[in-house]
Length: 371
View 1 (cartoon, rainbow, N blue to C red):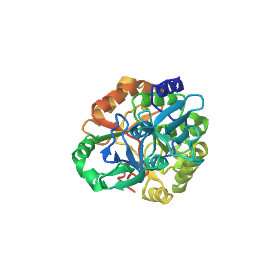
View 2 (view 1 turned 60 degrees about the horizontal axis):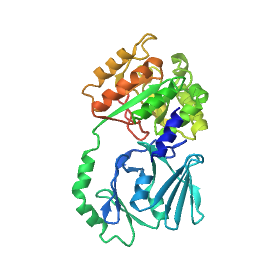
View 3 (view 1 turned 120 degrees about the vertical axis):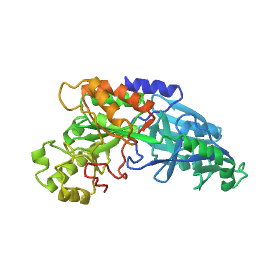
View 4 (view 1 turned 45 degrees about the vertical axis):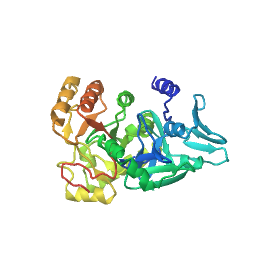
């Protein structure tokens, strides 16, 4: 059903990925303006963003700005961008591009607000634009013979507009986190998150990753955070020694890599890190390359089997009040799924941007260990 909805959306002029986001989930997204020759390009919904030093933008918006046509083939799930004698064909499921000159190579892609986001420089180069970067904006600029101004002049002439766009960026960020999955409820949780254009982070168990590979791959393609919750979820087993904690996270990471090709450094130990993760345990986990996450909002959706959606919503509303950056503990459960639309509505109405955790962020945990 979801796939049908996505394909219908594409037919209306939007693009959706069929699998696997290749932009790293460990990088922070930053504002960047895009200019074509001497003018800034306007983007109606999905905005360009700087990720790990690379500018990504909505393919259709940039193609239309340069006077190219864009066509989507539903059967083959390919996009063709044509401008004069130049043609770019993108195979979305394989994340592969082919050009009219015979170049064929992989292309990093991801989805933002139902728009296909692609590397700006790659596409601009293919249509013979010179690409430059001006850090004061920052501005990524595509220029051909029609460009008359220098980069600094483009910035100065658009300084107020850039400042206004930056001012629109959300100041409040909420991080939804789901533990113990994926399971039979996860697909519907992902459906709900997609409807609200919200992203979350999933702290998953190894056996659940292996049992539900489709859901895990879908998390990756939608840009959700992929994170670890170990193997046994048994305190006596995982906390038997500092090395046993590391071993469970390594086994969980191996399962994640087998399914998605992705390795993560984000871990959440079962039942929270206190009192289990003493200094020596934390040192061993950090030494193995992991960052340990807890939470500052507990929805109590796992308090008992009888917790109701109303109770879950009340806890989230109460505990997020006045918090600038809540990290919210949820679980892949039926009652949580029922509560999720109201939680998302409340958070977005309260001005929160819902983002995934990133591996390069200092972690929040009960020990205030920011390593």
